[in-house]
Length: 179
Image 1: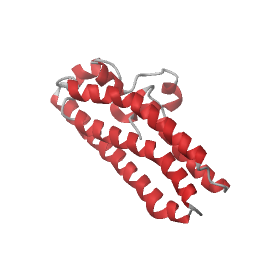
Image 2: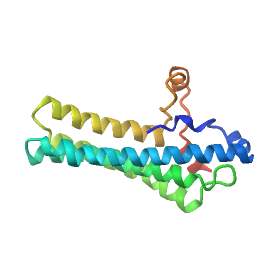
Image 3: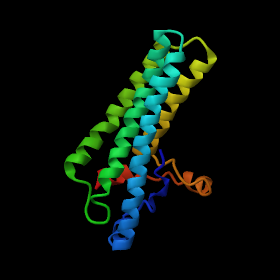
């Protein structure tokens, strides 16, 4: 959910991260981000399955919710694993090539998953405004997460968000994939 606290998005980070204290700080930050993304995915699964889903009127409503939540959860899990795995190479080496190939392939697959999620959400669109809002919100959150990890960095600390968002920085994941 939040890649904002990762530091500079330049190749200079690798040089700065090579010092043991800086590397240790980044490893802790990456651990926190990874666990946070996986925890967020778990919370969304719980919300969809245990709390919201059972309250929806019919199977179509639940299918719409599942269609909207699935891409979001998939992207959060991918991001969580990325941050946890990135702890291995931060400040020392580049992302391993097989992992870079995997994340390169996930970029268009996630787009297809978002498109399929939208198609499912529209096909089984719930009747009530609250259910429609939940479905639309979940799907849009998935789009924002996709953009944040695969297109342009959107997550910054609240105090710096307005100043940083206009810089259109490449997300850390895509910087690692590109090396």
